[in-house]
Image (cartoon, rainbow, N blue to C red; front, top):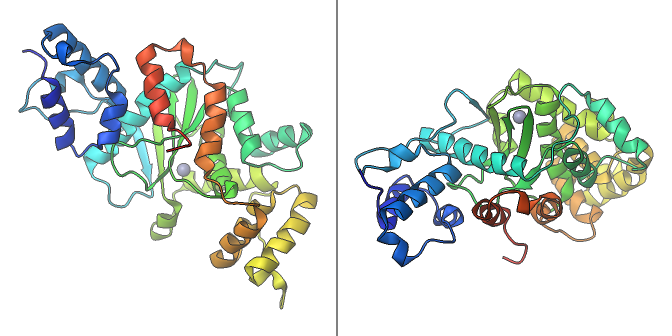
Length: 340
Ligand SMILES: [Zn+2]
């Protein structure tokens, strides 16, 4: 059987509901109208595209065959997932897994990761390095320093915006893919610290993935034990206490966004807690999220998408020339450009 034409291949991916963005990102740069006439070029196209999407290339041969994803059955655990279809789940995991393996090829391994490392140990190491508190930038420094790539996915196979973050383990190493963006660094620091918790607590076996969906949907389901443990790890890493409660004194000004911003800016540094994180802890403890998110606007000089900062660090750390040209082009598409 010969490989499908480029049109047939696109139709097959489109029939799965895959976004045009992701198809563009996986399409090889060398493809041309002339290549269409060559059976070997079409085969190479089919293999290249399926590798990037984590699809079994044999399942893209015949029109009557259903494209089959390579990962995401029993290897993936989906947390707080409400309404994604089976094909969306396996497709997202397979794509994440394909991205993670290229990221790891482009990230030099460090002597050791953070598997089995306590949150407090990581926190102590960050503070001993001269940081006043643990924030998004210091977590990124730790991850890249131990060979864990962290990126924001700017291209998704489906409208997977519900995905907060995903951790993929390939062999002995892990990669963290973030999905849900914020205008402020503190919420993203929490997502990242939570994923570091899954790695630190050895929740993943080689080849496994954990996909975390939007925490706002979490209220619908009681969190499972792994999720609570990863949350506690994150809070301890960020604040020094696994179950920090931040409440207001009676008649305190903290109940208003402006008042809360003043309090956390004053108290945070002395407690070695980033003020935005302290405001979120207040929101979590009191459920007064309006004050917490209102305070973030006052704490940071100006809102800026966190993904751009995270992917700027990634671009400076990744060794693009250590992966094949098509793979590095794919990575660049997945990282997005801050001007888009
Ligand atoms: Zn989780």
